[in-house]
Image (cartoon, rainbow, N blue to C red):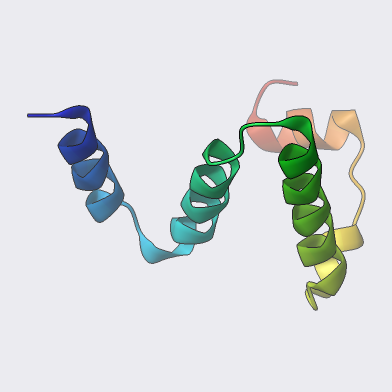
Length: 72
């Protein structure tokens, strides 16, 4: 099995909610130079700014995160 086929199998097994992350990762892999990389980062930033989810700006302390992750 080729690496491409393995990747496709993995993608096919992932839940739909993870697809945007995979798409962003794959788009990032397409860029070869700094200008395109900068454009990709800018597009991610714009997607974040345009995201209507009100919880995107919530802040959590390191202690809160550790407690939630069970490492505190």
